Amino acid sequence: MEQKHRFVALAESGHFTVSELCRELGISRKTGHKWLTRYRQQGTAGLEEKSRAPNRVPGKIEQEIERIIVSERRAHPPWGPKKIRQRLICRHGIKGPPSVSTIGAVLYRNGMVTPRRRRGGVFTVERGTLTSAQRPNHVWAVDFKGWFLLGNQQRCDPLTISDLYSRYVLRVEGLPQATTQWTQKSFKAAFRRYGLPEIIRVDNGAPFASMGPGGLSRLSVWWIGLGIDVEFTRPGCPQDKGCHERMHRTLKADCCQKPSINGAAQQQRFDRWRHEFNHERPHEMLGMQMPCECYQASNVRLNQRIKLRLYEVGDEIKRVSSSGFISLFGKNCFVGEAFAERDVALERDDKTGVIGVRYANVKLEDLADSPNARLQPTASAERWGNRACTKKQP
Image 1: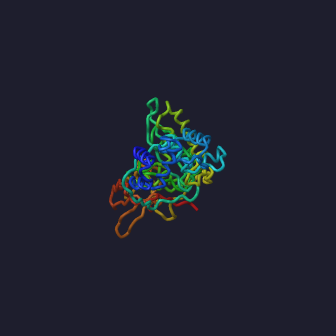
Image 2: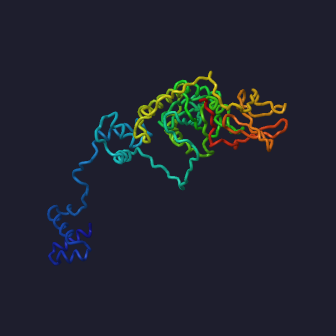
Image 3: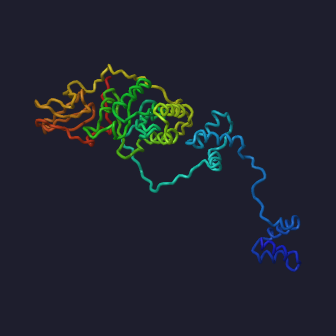
């Protein structure tokens, strides 16, 4: 401002030309004449900097639409610009809604975006032999979100089941404990309502897996007996069922940050959230469709009276006792409590004398040709193709 005033004063004195003053100050003659014109029209106020914002913005978002965007964000805090844009079309009937970037700018302008700290390092993840879901009920993902205490100081272990193809959340149930008994009871209810999947994908923690032969637990052995293949993710690789883990983050933000007073109230929150996730929340991977539009129940129903044939004719079959033993060489051989009251197959190698034990198509371990032989209790036993398979009856 001091230079502008000095320029105008010298130019108005008549002792210097505009060109000389512009060269001295390092500005163009067009700028010099503009300053002089504004000074002669408005006085000193004409030398102040003026806003360069346009007087009219044709693409400016309407105040009413911005209000709706803010209200939808408050009603659904985890939702991003893409889901809110789809909401404007489906629920509010807005034709030609703002772009995703514009909605993001509205959220940022209203202080509804929290910057996230970025983690350093980029890693390449190989998914191995995990099956890619091609249809509804092809692959189900199962996990426990992580326990927390309710308002009455009781423990809540949310069990979650989702269909990886349609992203449909089949079950969110707060169990008292993450045990085989409670988990199996919840799965029976899910199977009766939605039918049986082809594959269930789980991690290597209890009650889905164990440190016993084949890494199988009572629960996974039960699944295989029903004709369901069991896939195990790699240890320490939650990205192997990343969409399920991402769903957990939304579930935690909406239902678990402030737990309810008791289990019944918490389950009501879970049920309301599951309905919203399946029937109202558009999903980006589904082309902004709702999961309910892509999911349908399985035609394979639960019938525990029918026992599948897990072995071929001619296989040497042994019945496991209630305590986990089979009779071999006139002695008792421990196989594992997870296989209690189940049939296992023996595979004898005539050259080496080694006897292999498998359940369905899961190779458990080898037995030495000696009395009181015992399987090695290790979870590193071979899983064929990283998947516990069944031989389904044709």
